[in-house]
Image 1 (tube, one colour):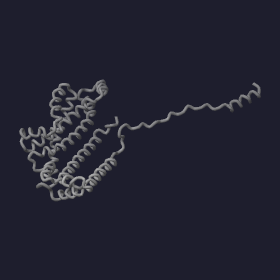
Image 2 (cartoon, helix red, strand yellow; image 1 turned 180 degrees about the horizontal axis):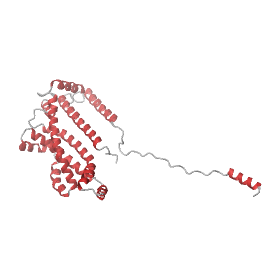
Image 3 (cartoon, helix red, strand yellow; image 1 turned 60 degrees about the vertical axis):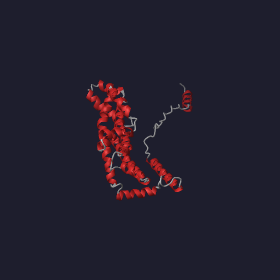
Image 4 (cartoon, one colour; image 1 turned 90 degrees about the horizontal axis):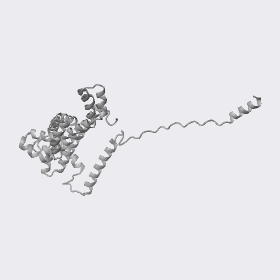
Length: 290
């Protein structure tokens, strides 16, 4: 090749446009579905403050008589007085401890019986057929509907109160345990069986951990049902308890004392719910991350 041809070829290579590179894939950050993982404490606190402000505004405007809706300051003042001097022939701690004893006793009974029954209903067709009928029959009934039966059958002592609370908490625990078993993916069961798992290993390592989040949620719901039933349970010849304090105040139209009792129940229920959230975070840290 001549020298002129070589120079022409070199010049052509220099003037050739460089090849365009293929664009790199752009990474897209996945968006969370639902509420995500951000805390809602600020929103909850702001909502509570807004409700208190609305309550204060209604009472200051005189839209409702103080006999029916006392001011927040009056309720707070009476709450401090009840904390120091007691109410209805008992201290505030005596009322709270009596109610806590009934709630905890009923919760132990409901959990100890409800979880095995619910798991059995989820695993056995016969168990589901036998237990579902009575549970579905009494579950929609308000506790006041079978309160007279508790008095007739068990008397007016502590037994009738605890049984009434246990019945209110039993059904949510059973139904949540059953739902936890029924939500178990069949592929997970088949994988365990293909690896040679025994029935006990399948239950202990697959069924129970998978159902545990639902069970803990059911216990939280059951505790809420127990606190909402407390006033009805303490109608039965009680002399101590937050529900008894509320009913005693209502007889004298002491609305501020009723508000104090409601606030105490709300604080106790919140403490129970918060404790259950901590237990959930400890036992089932994978919940919501599957």
